Image 1 (cartoon, rainbow, N blue to C red):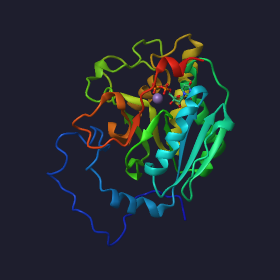
Image 2 (image 1 turned 45 degrees about the vertical axis):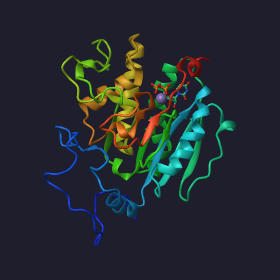
Image 3 (image 1 turned 30 degrees about the vertical axis):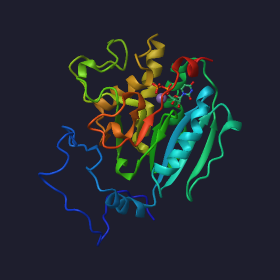
Amino acid sequence: RDRNCDLDSPKGLLYKQPGITLGRCDVVAVTPWSAPIVWEETFDPVLVDAIYKPKNLTIATTVFAIGKYIRFLRDFLETAEKHFMVDFKVHYHIFTDQLQDVPAVDLAAGRKIFVHQVPKLKRWQDISASRMQMIQTIIEEQLYREADYIYCQDVDAKFHFRWGAETLDRLVGQIHPWFYDLGRDQFTYERRPESTAYIPPGEGDFYYIGAMFGGRVEEVYKLVKSCHENLEADKANGIEAAWQEESHLNWYLLYNKPSKILSPEYLWDDLRGKANVMKVVRLSHILKNYAEVREN
Ligand code: UDP
Ligand code: MN
């Protein structure tokens, strides 16, 4: 089977006729550059699966569990087995400094865990930001050959509901749950022109969260390479962007528009409680004691 991912739909599958005037009226489901914003009830999961499952895709996901964050890995993996790309070939790429503590989790057929040993850096900011470089390297060494799509996720999160093939696209960004209802001038973009992540006032689409981005392997490669180079350029100039790699990700996705955007359903924050636009929570960042998990 070839690795061509152009859409082709199954014959004879019966599903609800697409509407022109009806649908979700409480949320926007398309950007000004015509990319979908994915919300519950804007797609038919049976149809989506019927389109994508025959393509025999391999979906890689990267997850870092360094230092105390290893404690989040079991829940992440166990809940991913229940809700993340169910019935697809998923390759979990786990980056950790504690190989012996990676939990043994039962995986469905066709799903695999790859463990990569990485050093533990001292500052949490550096651990988080170094993901860009490590993802770049794993794509070069392995994923170009082995995966069609790659989704890069935080480990301190749990799946609760379908997180499926409706998320697949060329370049995918995730709206941050704390900023989806704010104006662009309240976004915590990097505001110092000296940084390569600088975004001037008056510009900006969404505030994207650093905890989830993805898409086709070759597109994510361009993203992580650019963010890594800009992180290095800033370091050479003695400046660190306000939110490290998240600031650089926001710069990249402003000037390289994503082809699909995930609503906050795809990464909510348990601290925010329940919001009216949220018909489901698919994945949520769990509550954690920042001071405790980040101390060495
Ligand atoms: N991380 C890690 N060990 C650390 C700090 C961070 O493994 O000591 C990884 C982990 O995958 C985590 C991600 O980097 O989910 C982002 O850090 P964090 O979750 O603390 O950022 P936040 O979501 O709170 O902004
Ligand atoms: Mn996190």
